[in-house]
Structure formats: structure tokens, C-alpha cells
Length: 87
Image (cartoon, rainbow, N blue to C red):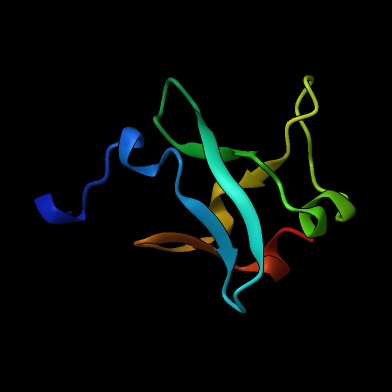
């Protein structure tokens, strides 16, 4: 992986999460990863939109919405996810 391809978690926190069709889901509040392997498992949403609240997505014990990191297809100004991968 080239040096410019690396992203630090602090660069991802606060990014707006949108689907590839442009639907807004909320912002990245935290990233959950496997400590042994470093594999990214989920991102926790903050400020979820009413659209996101209606979907029956996975939640943690505190009721925060979790999006599987495997659904992320692009990271730039926004965190773009494949909506069909989470529903």
C-alpha cells in the first residue's frame, strides 16, 4: 500500500456517510476494529438521519447504529457505502 493510500482513524471520524446513490446516513463517530489483526469491523454512526433510523441496522449495546466496514466503497470528502451491502 502506497504511503498516500493510508488514512488515520482521526481523518475518518466526523466524515459524512452517504450511499453511492447520495442518501445521507450520518457521520462516522467511531471505528471498531479487531485488536489482534487490526481488521476494521464496523463504523459507528453519530447524528443518524431519519432515513437511517427507519432501516433495521445492527446496533451496539448503547443503541448506536453500526455499519459494516466491508460496505465502504470509497473514502474522500465523504465515506461512500454500498447500501445493498448493509440492508
